[in-house]
Image 1 (cartoon, rainbow, N blue to C red):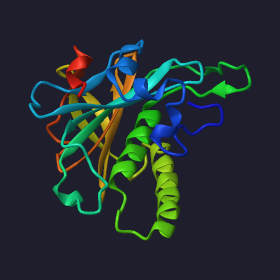
Image 2 (image 1 turned 60 degrees about the horizontal axis):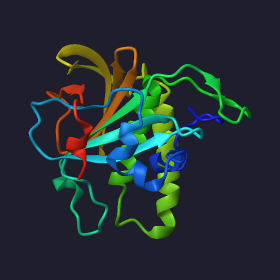
Image 3 (image 1 turned 120 degrees about the horizontal axis):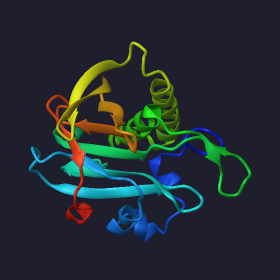
Length: 219
């Protein structure tokens, strides 16, 4: 999705550079998108909250995330095993195209794009907080590389198939679990790909739906 290939080499937040910081973390950035946002369907009755959107260099919104449940915390005193959340990542379906500045190519988005964003998103909120600071970046770099390789091999043995409803219609998703949580990735029609990750909430039984009013997520 970027001119050099991997989206979010430094993490999901680094790719949201085409919008002002306040727009990335408020409903304003979501309202600028030209595609529908997805979240958990109405069967989920818990808290909903916004995360941030990512945009290309020309400011066009490419993806964003909506949160459900308890907002994850990286504070040392927080017990990750007690956290319960699901984050839904919506990625606009884009063909390969020239970059805005004409200096390179933007890769086409795919289900692998959604899987990569979901996998790196899970890492960003579940890495071992008690790890020595000198080792954290090495650990993150290693796990990020693994997440990318897994996203690029959705037919591999690390993934299984899971059917989940999208707007009430069963859809096929790629699913994997790790000690940090789970990740799913699939496609919702022609407009977007969906990725999701979570911890403490089972992926089985979840359903996705178009967010009719994104402002209800604004905290």
